[in-house]
Amino acid sequence: MFRKKLTGWMFLLPSFVGVSVFYLIPYVFMIYMSFFSGLKNPEFVGLANYSSLLGNGAFQLAMQNTLLFSVVSGPAIILLSLLLALKLNKPITYGEQVKSGFIMPLVIPTASIILFFEIMFNYRGLINGILDKFGVDPLKFFNSNLSLLVITVIFIWKNIGYNMILFLAGLKSIPKDYYEAAHIDGAGKVQVFWNITFFYLLPTTFFVVVISLINTFKIFKVNYLLFGQYPHDKIYMIQHYLNNMFDKLEYTKLITASILFSIIIIVMMAVMMHVQRKLFEVE
Image (cartoon, rainbow, N blue to C red; front, side):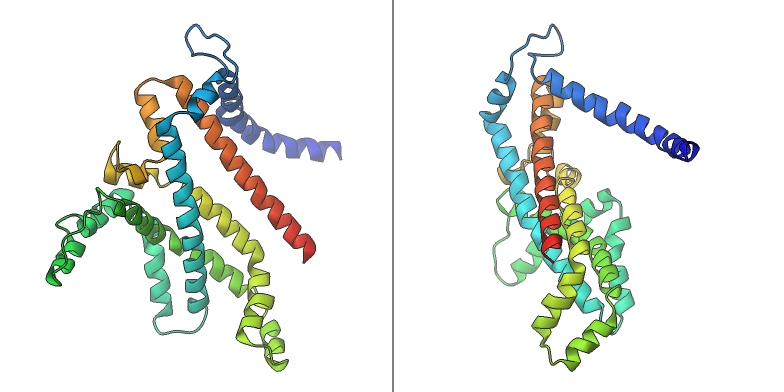
C-alpha cells in the first residue's frame, strides 16, 4: 500500500516541483516584496505601496476597463455560444460546415486576425466603405468609445467556437429519454429547457463561465497589436498598466498591481465555486 502511494507521489513530484519553482515560490516572493520600497536597498513600508496604487488614476482606469470588459463580453459570449449550440444540436442544412466555420478562428494566428479586423474597422476600411455608400459619415472605431466594441467583437468571434463545442458536448450527453418523457407529459418548450436542458448543462455552464472569464483577461495581445501601448481610454486594460510599469522599471508598482489583480481573480473564482457548490446541494 505504501509503495503504491509512494509511486503515485513520485509521478506527481516533477509537476509539483515545476509549479512550485515557477509559480508558487515567485508568487510568495512577490507578496513579500510588495511590502518594501523597492528591489534595491529595500525598506519596509507596510501597506504604503497598496495605498499609493489604489489612489493611482491610471491603475483605477485600467482596473475599471478590465472588469467592465469581463462583465460585458463574458456573459455575451456565454449566451451567444449557448444559443448557437442549441441551434446546431438540431439537424440543419450544412450544420457540420457551420460548426467548422466557428471553430476556424481558434487555429488562425492572432496577427492574421488583427490584419483582418484592421481592414474591416479602419477609417477607410470595409465597414466605413459600406456606410459611405448609404451616406453615413465614417466612424472612428480605433480612436473613440467604439474601440471597446471592436475588441468585444474580436473576442466573441475568436472564442465563441470553443464555448459552442463545450455546450454541444453537454447537450449530446443528455439522454433523449428525458425529452420524450417530458413530451408525453405535455411539458412546454420553456419547461423542458429549464428542467432538463439547463439543469443537465449546469456543470458545463460553470466550466464555460470560468473559461470565458479567464479568456477575457487574455485580450491584451489583441488589444496591444491593434491599438498599441497607449490605446483609447476605454480599452486601457490592467495588462497595459503592468506592461508600462515594466518598461519604466517600476518594479514595486508592477508587483503590487499584479498581487491586487490576482487577488481579484481568486475572489471571483472562489465566489463562482461557492455558488456552484451551493446550487448543486440545493438540486
